[in-house]
Length: 452
Image (tube, rainbow, N blue to C red; front, side, top):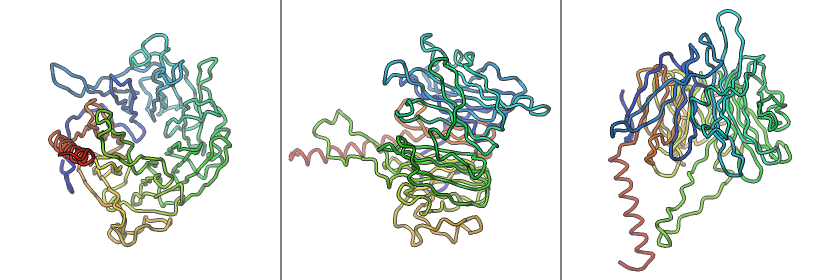
């Protein structure tokens, strides 16, 4: 595997092979209690197999461990379509009540296929609400679907709607379906989605990917992409259910992913610095900080900047993202530790692309919202620059950026058609960055005290 561009100090530390390939919906990050760290749940499509990947300390060495989790009521001839998980709230406000895992699959796909959504969670009082083996045998409901499922995701409703976390499931019936847990029966049941999400009424096509982001002032940003290339974004007042702004654009090919993200990270000042810490700017949520990444089968990947202010009118292309077959997935993360999120793209052409936003770096800063599929990346200009590129041996299907080793350094998870790759930051690079920042803080602190 080869890396090109600026060195951001990442290398492949671990690899775990899957018995069969996953897909773009086959990765879910399991948010475990702090002392356990984050784990991965990865679907191996054929045979209905699911694998948990986590780092464990074995004989004094931290190693990536993969083991199969046997979920009940998923037959051996099933094909997994999509998975998702979230932490439900506990009985007391502010507490966690354990993991809820959703799995969609197609049973007997070669003969008389039937589609299902299984939802798993252990009872809170058992004390095993984070034990994957217990959860996998605790199927809360088995729901037969009358449509082919696509992406399964989740979001939290506003307090006016009960504040529950619900599953959202796209399908080939040109609808998005909402599944919510009934507080009396504890069963998940489908509810009318337009009661809470009026922006999902009368979709222009089959939504294959969606994302939501709650912002201050009872507002929600909702984005979805369809298999016919349509992309839509809406700004909704959650309390009144008023759609304050809604617009769409048409791309030339199927959309493979959409992702809402913020420019900056929230990094609070460490308490140990006390009053000697330099005065850092207080981060406040601003409408101009929210942007939308869109990847598609035929076109360049693009970022729609400041969607709360201008909708989908400010389009910036990601250079060279169309040179490596289709861009299949994306995620965001601060991979160079400058406090700004970078955009990470994975392609079927086996390339991992990392883009950085540098305002003012291009004369033709933002393009119109017309289709860009037929244009060559070399002839387009953008404020995004290709910061880093790495080649893999197999197509890339899914990405995630998280701290799996509980050491404060986040890992980049890359799911390819052969397995799971874990890219880690160089410890030498991290140590150098920490030393540099501490020296800066010490210098600024000395200036504040007026002493040497």
